[in-house]
Length: 127
Image (tube, rainbow, N blue to C red; front, side):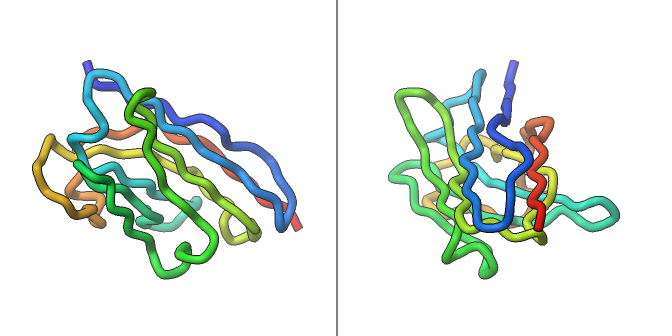
């Protein structure tokens, strides 16, 4: 059974940092494109960043390039989203996702390309 469990969200102030974790079971994260998405109430889910299978190349949405970092710990089978200098508009539910096992070296950006999803973790950034 495949499970993705996010953790690390919470209530922070503008300028603070958070590190989200995605602990995986039932899959080996290094064999998947692993993506982070976020969704605000009333809006569509959007891609934030991700890490590819294999050597772990990273890709980010333009709005996240300078502040967010995606990484993977193969020994722990866990992926992370480091978020720095948070802003109120970063407030959202953050989701971890995995595609099907692949030899591709590229990160998938579209949520329709992912087949495994975590339940999400809430990040709230106050002014």
